[in-house]
Amino acid sequence: MLDHVSITVSDIAAAERFYDAVMRVLDVVKVGRRDDWLGYGERARPAYPDRVYLSIRKGARPEEALGRHWCFKAKWRTQVDAFWDAGIAAGGTDDGAPGLRDYHTSYYAAFLRDPDGNRIEAVCHHAM
Image (cartoon, rainbow, N blue to C red; front, side, top):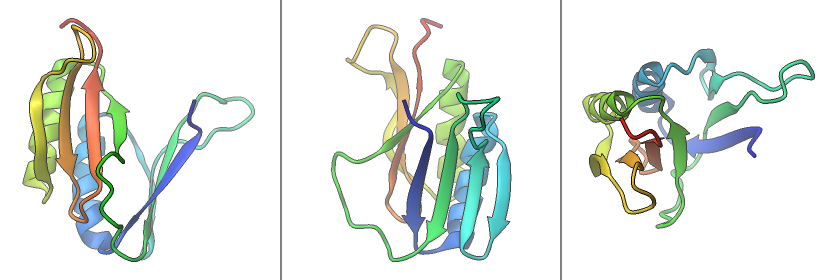
């Protein structure tokens, strides 16, 4: 459904520490860095239309929005656990420890706030 997502952070160095850590455990590659931008994933191309890309740009601190968040797919529940642990260690805050959720019987997820308060999630839909 999504081709790419862009988010805003006020401190690119803090965001880089955080997103490098959580993307690494989810096996998402970092594709670029400037003083005002970070890129993760791979841009879609005609030969690779299913790729997904995350762009993080320096700007004003984002406004609080309760329901807004980005969710990343994890292959295994252990990746969800590692996502949460890495995010906490890299300056994020807990917004829902790893565990089963009520969305379906195998929905295993964790929620974090990045250093700017953006809410992110990792989910594994497999029963193990």
